[in-house]
Length: 151
Image 1 (cartoon, rainbow, N blue to C red):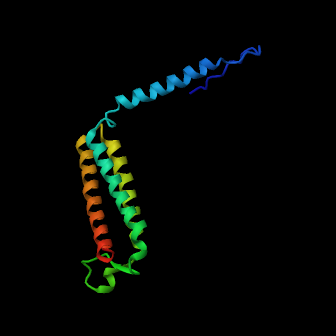
Image 2: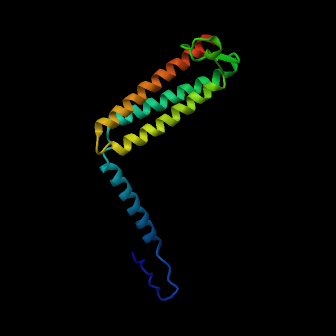
Image 3: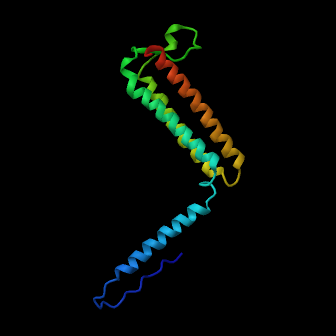
């Protein structure tokens, strides 16, 4: 591909009118919002509902961690199905990794849903439904750990 050479203008001391810059910005913003309106991913109510649910579940996890982490004992039972008691207990700082895992899982799921929405709507809806259910289970277990020791 050939690059277009910019034609040099005569230097007559004229400046570009401010109105032209305003019109250029206005055109760009109108073009952006027209693209957003025509993108059906942004108008899908299920994806918006699931994204808002996921964000609220992560915020609940964050609230419990920030508010009550100091009141927990040094080790908490996280893996209840482990055979030995030593494997059931984890350091309370491990609870931060649950929040990080939830955020990473959310980012990956939203990326997959956005990529597959136009081709396979069922896959994106299935992905977001699984994300909501998975984070709901993580949040419930998270709250259960905190309520055992706090309330």
